Image 1: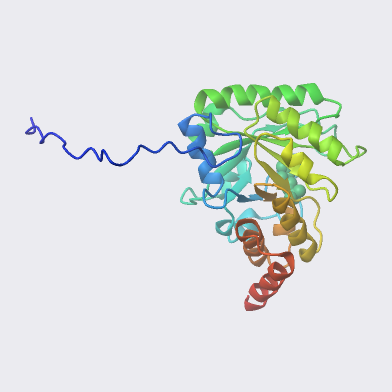
Image 2: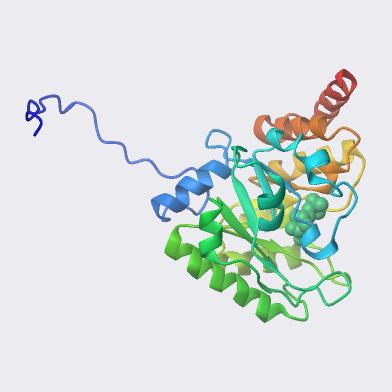
Length: 291
Ligand code: R5P
């Protein structure tokens, strides 16, 4: 039995107890575990994140740049803030010593050969916890053929996530023939947030993106989309964060770049330090030339 310690005397009576709000938009009423996971994804100083998305194989197989995760992605993954991928790639390719937070793809089903909106949940919460995920991502197809089913996938995941302190990222997926405008994205992002998503991934649009972020009560991360030239991708990321995005979740514009590590670092400077696009491009070229 240890000796009882001396009774405490220093109660710092002149220091008021802190009652800080949480740094992320709309997230102050979440529980500790949920906030802790979000604070691993989003940098508490900048309030933003650079997520590297490599989950494309879950519906399109080994696409360009993702043929060999061990060769092409593992060397660049340490330069991202967060890695977004499937559990299959995580278990088979990523060493458990990789220290960055993991966002796991939690929906799936159809391939590019079929109707993509016909997804179901494709991951159990227990496995997500076993894999120490920091958040789960689910596709939401507003206006798509299986719109309601995809919304219900999200709400079921939010219910399970709330039980275990696991944040849910709703990914707004736009059908090929649908208009990609501010009106659509306001609708899609707001619906995801209203129905419980803890943060939302959506596409940047030059006209009215600030109305999309303003009307969404939780953080939005910008989706990368198809590969475009580096200066354009850096400009898009810059414009998105200036218009209220809490960072980016980019895939092809990173891993299909000629210099993915340089690109990740330049995007990081845009996102966390507000580096203007021209300077970010110069940074990219400089890092690329240094090899
Ligand atoms: C899309 O909806 C999936 O999550 C993608 O596999 C991925 O996130 C897309 O990333 P990007 O469009 O930047 O290549």
